[in-house]
Length: 270
Image 1 (cartoon, one colour):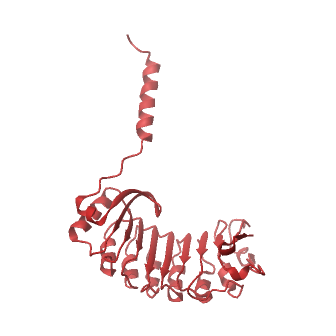
Image 2: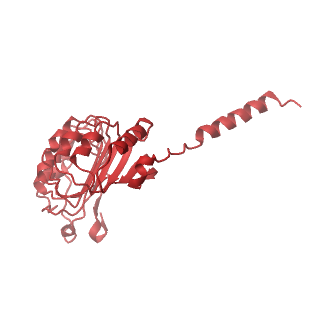
Image 3: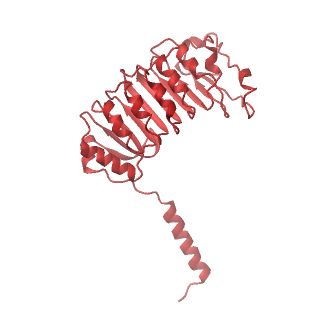
């Protein structure tokens, strides 16, 4: 019994569509990375497939080769933690074509910025829980052509590094949580050409958020900007003003006035 040609074509199209729609299984964790409790798959830090591991001891050459092999196969996002990761490991990361790198709890210093600057394919960078990171040398990040997201939290990063962040002209999203920035440092972001989202939480430094740093609000971009400003001191007066007038003469697209002020500590949304 022969099936009609149209029915055969429909079956073939259905099969092909389902084959294309089926998600690819993540690669198997290489044996060399199993001592690091490595996992490959989804992760909160990045979209797509992520290699995550924790190294409390120095990463061996065999383990680095496994990381490089995974990246060559398409696993280009890495979330790494542990005291076994130091400045020298960032030189090795710089040889891998990563798009996302987040490092938590490592024994790193400001020396990593020179290595990070060599990562020309990197789109997202996260550095957290590293108190020896102060921001000195962050100006090297200005040479990165693809960097769009920077997240820094629980570090000694302060005003010394803010000019470096502001120099990353491709930057769209910036998260600063529990570091050492002050009003002076944050004001370096004034007139940034691309930032769309800026989240800042209570700092170990002195950010008042009371309008004294007018440059902080003069950030420009083609889309509306979302500020998360958890400053309890703003609750009684809510005097924060976002002055859009400096933007009107430089903007090619109309301003979209959808700014939101969220004071997380007291759950006030204005």
